[in-house]
Length: 185
Length: 102
Image (cartoon, rainbow over all chains, first blue to last red; front, side):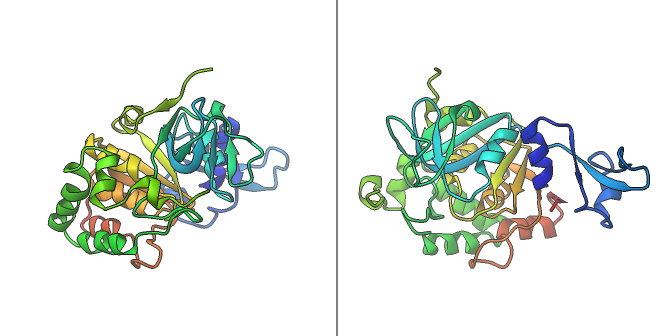
């Protein structure tokens, strides 16, 4: 899948990969995977997989500016996903005057790959952002417990999603205030 | 240069029913504020892709009825659960489609 996204990011129609050889994915998904002859060596055959260009990529990052330049976690796949996708939404902990591509706090994604930047302090809650805030273990355990049945998860959704109209109201519900909770950076 | 700073609500309008949405594979950094807004807007028919792997991102969209198909290589939940819990329930009940893709 990674190489399919990689192909999508490069604008080429498919990728040659050996990762699927011998699996039943080839039989089950003939529209996405095929075995072809190596055009450079007729003795060899290889798996090819269709390039992936998702409609949308969504991820959370550290900083963004009004033009759409963002700084995201280091060592992640975000840049590749942004390059492969048609539309890209990045929520960020803070909006700054200008995101500098030399900022060492994270990895830079230039505005050309970003459709929308959204300011969402504590936007990953109840999951965490390493270096800024920890995962909220109690709330994640509550989510897991609620996931047991439709009824209990619907209750969870009512409480944390539908009965709060906005991200700000969500933060108030869980007792967080961005200006106090996010540590100085 | 075009101004790209928008509200959560405005950004959610970029997403249409039936879209394929891709996410990274980590539990940390899950764009939950955005995902809760997609649930509020009752977006439907989403295929959620996890590269590489998925966690609360894919699981939340399944649980909220926003996604009915996921494509990824694994769907974990860090130390909190053996398998992403909404995925486990909905898959066992045959109410969603999982495409295995490493």
